[in-house]
Image 1 (tube, one colour):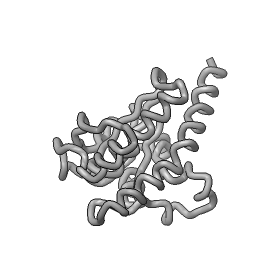
Image 2 (tube, rainbow, N blue to C red):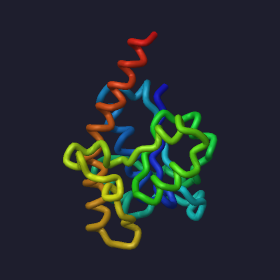
Image 3 (tube, rainbow, N blue to C red):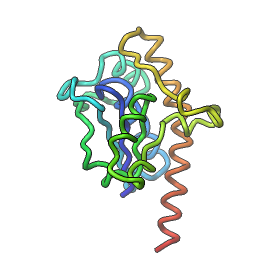
Image 4 (cartoon, rainbow, N blue to C red):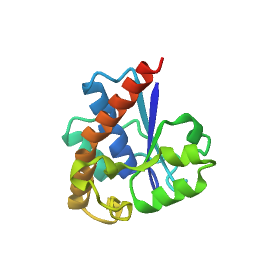
Length: 169
C-alpha cells in the first residue's frame, strides 16, 4: 500500500480537501486498492472537529462526501509510515522538514503544488496555498483550484513510484 498524508494547520480546510480530492482521483485511476490518502494538521487546535462548512460545501458541489472527516494532528510516527507527506503551505513544509527524524523522512516531505505543471520551476517559498479559513467562498474556490491543478501530477508521480516498486521486485 502506498500511503500519502496531506498536511495543513488545523486539518479542517486545505488538507481534508486535498485528501478527499486525491482519494477520488486514485479511485478513478484504478489505484484505490493500492493508495491510501489521509490528512492531518501541524497543530491539534481543531482536533475532533469536522471539516469547515465552506470546504464541505465546495466538495459537496463536486459530489464528494466529507461528513466523516474529523480533524487530527500529525503524528511523528507517520514519517516512517507514509511514502509521501504533502504540505499545503510553506510553514507546514518547513515545520515537517524540521521535525523529520532523518534525511529519508525529510525526503518524503513535499509541497503539494510541486506537482502542478504550471508551477514548474517556482521556488518552494512561492508554492503555498494560503489559508482560506480567513476568507470567503472565493478563497475556498481558489484553494480547490490550486489543489485540483496539482492532483494529476500527484497521481502520475504515484503511478511511476508504484511501477518502480513492481520492477524492483
